[in-house]
Image 1 (cartoon, rainbow over the protein chains, first blue to last red):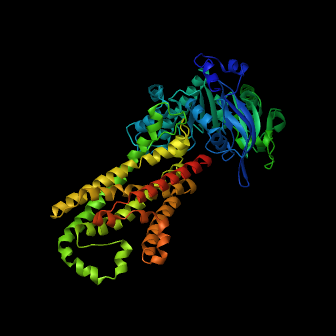
Image 2 (cartoon, each protein chain N blue to C red):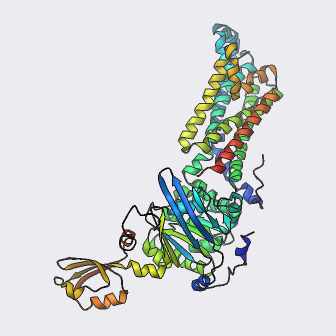
Image 3 (cartoon, rainbow over the protein chains, first blue to last red):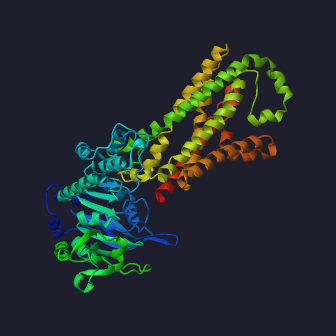
Length: 323
Length: 275
């Protein structure tokens, strides 16, 4: 069985992501020309990429781009129109092999459908019967949904925490997370990110979909960007960081002298009286060094919107496909 | 009924019973609620019977014959005929039949609709097993309703100084099981075909009711009686069982075969479709 080869990997041994990348053997997820059409709508269009053991792979795209479709194809919930994929060595078109492989897969869906009348504990018992729960106690120390209450009384954040616990408690080799931090408060998001990094360092493979660029930048090793069903970019996160830049707004004490202020790392510069808006593509420290030379009243530095990245780096031709 | 399909995934009993357990729990509330309805109905009819039984023969003559044929009513002046007509011919065959169709129609469609099915199928469990465990959980309403209502009717008769043949009473319930399962099977097939649970449920209970009407109306005219052969209620005759102690085992076998066919169709459709 091909799924057995994953057990041979040094799952417990702590290895850094870079080491894991250098030993790229058989991918944990192999996606090959995956296509899903609903009538005239192409939800996934010839998507091809691999995810390797021991990496956090970010699957980035605006809402409705087709991220969830790819994930649901990988889990065998829907069938591809064309192309295929392998998950832990199991072809997604081979129902029996995929069902077996799922014992080593954890899944956190974007919309959590729990049995609402059960308590959190009963929900976990239910999943434990199907695939084990050797890490339940450890996870409940980090994420604590109110276990004795019925799920129907849960807040969005509590449901998400219960979802995280069920996704990891059977100690899977591959965890597929669909917008995992939506609904979590910032503290829990940080905790989640730290937890995912620790899991990655312990050799787990994490497939992480998000529409939030900053989140993907923070924790992912590699990123695939999907737009309108097609994969438009596949690159290391450092390369993406260089390309994406920062969204900056500076309010100066005096009207702006563009010739003195603007450097070549600034693009899309817009100047209105004493306020300058631009996208900065260089190092943050260099920007700060540059700014202190001016008399500044206010500075606002933020992440660019995904749409801006698409506009700058992948063209804004909405009809473009594949890329 | 076995919940495991033997796909090789059910290595532990947990995998093969987790859904069965949760689904069984979900069926308790509805089943108990229906038993309570039958307690109230029985109290009403049993308290009416002593005063009505004397007038029943007059009533039987006053109404045109087709009225009784429509409901398959006979011997209203006996406790067997009266209860067969009032409790079983109407409430058991239609109300409980519709309940099973309604539950069956929700089994798959409701889970797909609220995305529960996504999480369920992320487990190492086959789609066949999901369907079969959900169907197997129908043991709860079958046991609760059959034991509950049989006890109510038996005790109720004793209370008013009448009595039922316990064998005939047991058979009226036992032989209704395949009929109720067919109703659930009709719902189940709709549940895997129709996307919206409300539509599936409405279609299932309408279909079960219409099939009963077709059976009842077609029975009025010998020329059209053959049409009723395609309706499940034709294969379950509560009056024949209670009044004449005729047990149509072969008819029950036909219903059971149809139920298994409906489950097989549902499994095949569900394993092939997107959710």
